[in-house]
Length: 69
Image (cartoon, rainbow, N blue to C red; front, side, top):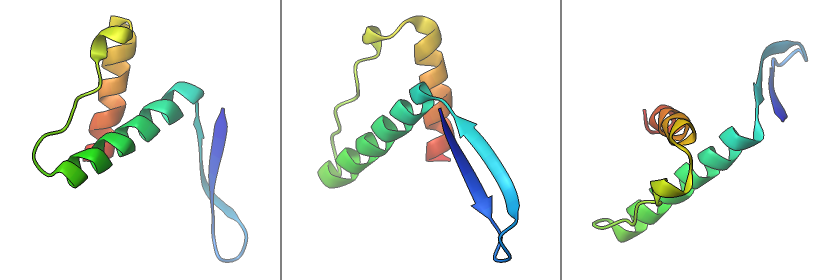
């Protein structure tokens, strides 16, 4: 679990978010996918979705859609 904190110029905490390990892993894989797609600029290999259970795949897609928007 990681806690990300936004701190104002005066040192007060303005916002905080806790992110679990699965979400961090998905975010990093999402960023890596976007970089590969940008480098290839035409074809990008999609990560195989069959390795994860259905619920995990759905959660992964939800997180990735937030990154892309």
